[in-house]
Image (cartoon, rainbow, N blue to C red):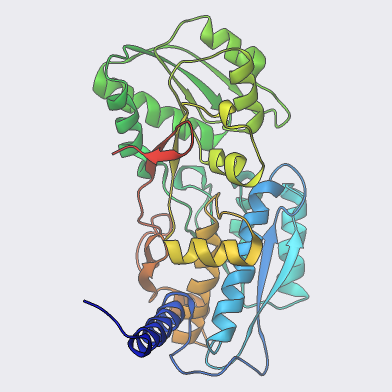
Length: 373
């Protein structure tokens, strides 16, 4: 089929129009055709570790939050009112996170709070949410790391179990492996991953030779990795997936097939990490749709990682909740269920099973990383 110039122009106009509509449906909270939001803003508090060890993780979350507010307000806001985010820095410290929450709820009188990114700075906020009757949503804290329970607390962090299929694929891709070691992070999050690894190892009859655990944010993991490599495992599981670990792994000449975490993408795409440091690494990742990736990259010049999509969905879900029930955020939130940018988001059931997507498994090659099927 051939096209004239005029038909190409008409086709281009139609395509552009369709893309614009899809963007509004995908990202906006309001109805199609709404004008940009105006009037009295709806205040949502955000307790984030803007400084301290968790700041790298938080930066992607803040970018995603701000992107969500831009998209929602441009599409009409919440019943015509714009969303305004008020950030407070927890400094990656539990006591400071508590003070930040108190300030947001008692001084700023926010209608809901988003935060924080790690479990030990989020857990102290759960009883406060219950006491204050203020909805609190953590974008990233995993189910096994949650301590305490409140009707007002939700987490849309992916469950630890959502990586089970990826761990199985890792061992299936290294089918001759009979032994393994684990480099773990010594907290509830790390222990839950450690348990998952052991369960999948047991399924395949893989023997655990040893494990080394740490909670030193500044570690290069040289001592722990050297001890584990001396055991000569067939595969290695490493939850502290940081650039420092990748560098040490490379310097020690470790070639053992290794499964680690999604910070690999951050290193390769956003921090100019030499590809040889990650060569051959397997890693788990939850992948947002391409429209979100493109929008994020256009806005910030970075690839959205560290579950940036979950932060976006936290803002989006609260907007939908307030749109459904302006007088009762919790009641409105309990009606929220939709297809998000990286899987189903469902607030109608279990508070720690909100995000339904399973992790994918990737391996770093010479020029790219590819999904392992």
